[in-house]
Length: 135
Image (cartoon, rainbow, N blue to C red; front, side):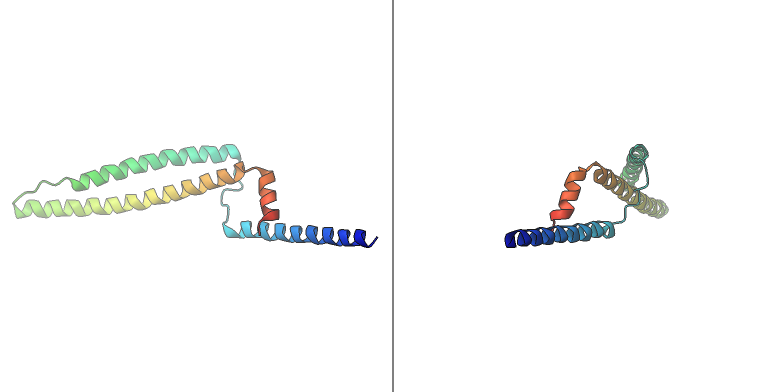
């Protein structure tokens, strides 16, 4: 009888500790990083990823074109031509910086979308087991 009570208390302590650990890890996961695309359906998320991949490729091509245009110079000896080349290079530099920011923003959104997709593809049993057993 004494062993039965002891076994029941140990079992109750293990279940209680497991429940506490599960709740703590689930709360930690939710507080760690907000999931901005949680409410999107799987098909909508896949379509959004595809669209952002295309937009990122287009932005990358525009950025690469701007970078190659920056490297081209005429090397004139006349002061007026050099001033025009300098102004053109400044304008292209501003355009390049703008495209860099645009490209970085699209890549960040694409990473976030892919992270959401990976979170959805995880095995639910493994998620629950990880929450239960991770200290």
